[in-house]
Length: 375
Ligand code: SF4
Image (cartoon, rainbow, N blue to C red; front, top):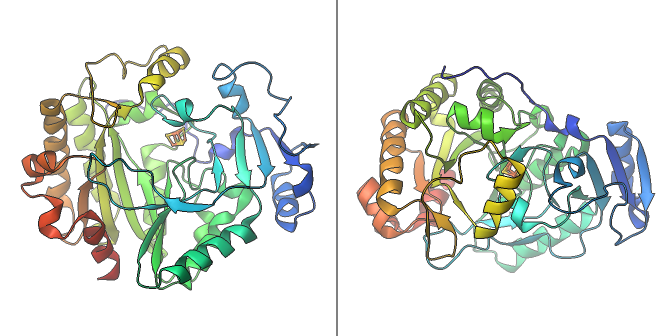
């Protein structure tokens, strides 16, 4: 091991200290269930109002805000296409918006720049969520949907309190038209036990080199905990996925990624893994000030970056290729032949240089991923 992980948070929901409920949601049975399960103090707040319990200004109050969970109604859409950019190859994912913000705290988390409220939000009108998904499936009967809940939050970080995974996995088991990916850095998988998932849910973990996980991913599960949770899910028959994103250059990065990848394939059956993505660190310019201000010891923003076609800062292309080639070779060496290894938001040139082909030659990224599920 490169270094010992001193503290671990297998269940980051333990960071939440207080719950707040929008007045109009208080009598929903689901709200009542969550309050009973959480056994935390709660207050009732008027609809649409900021939480007075979290004083100060964003993002200075973000750490304190993550101890407060607001249960409220989603008044917008739950289900929509992932907002990818035109300039890079994307995987045509659909996003299921279950809430905002996350009790973990990663130095590179894009949400720091994207959100403007410090507290955690979870939407309790899940009947509307199920209705919306059902309508979307019916409106496009020939389409296959890959769906993720982890765009504005972590898929399982609050699952001990919400148990939402059980509703979603059970709903997806009845759908022929899609697969749900629950993506996490926690080890909260107990709710997935004993469900008739019918292969319609993939459980996924973001992984990194150990020094990055220890220093830059605050209150996330350790590598051991993530891999033990993954192995457990494989035993329950779930398909798995892993995301090496963001890949970050740091002293000893070659050895760091090699150790993590070896541990992954030593602990988890390769044939359970449907896909593995790679993405080098990239961020909106606005994130740099927030990230360096909140994480003054972090060195991830102090390297050289260029502005990519999507306006995000990225490593220079030869530098990205070097990182990717190393990680890809390690993955390819041990991955099952059916596992799809792909880039999140990279150009055809990078695909060609690293993998020796472009997605178009294999039907495109969405088709490559869909094939791993549909066989
Ligand atoms: S786990 Fe994901 S959502 Fe949570 S802070 Fe880290 S990057 Fe952000």
